[in-house]
Amino acid sequence: LAGNENGDVIHQLEHRISRLEGVLRLNKIITESGGKIFATSAKKADFDATVEKCKEAGGSIATPRNPGENDAILYFVKYFNTYAYLGIKQSLTPGRFQILGGAQLSYTNWYSNEPSGKGEE
Image 1 (cartoon, rainbow, N blue to C red):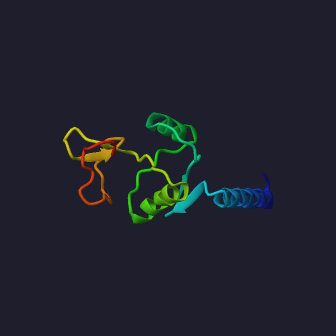
Image 2: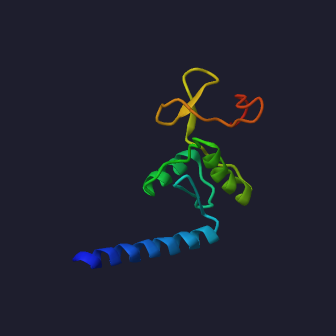
Image 3: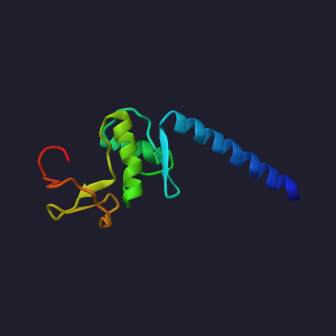
């Protein structure tokens, strides 16, 4: 596109994206923290299905890396009165956890005495 037409198309796309994000926020299925978008389908699913759906959407299962991201995930937990899966798993060392890709956790916000290894964590 020539000169100003390119800028007009970009402006139109930005406007459309902004409107779509507004609708999704009204429906309580997206929130944002630090430039990252957190979304939910608000449907119950098992862990593997959740990981797959996130990949299909071009993202990944949420792994909070700071208090703001933790709050974004907690927003869904509170609003939908349910739990949320996180992209964290137990490492080969008992009692230690890591990001699904294998990296060490740099942020945790466990309840006191958790994770306990009892029941579902």
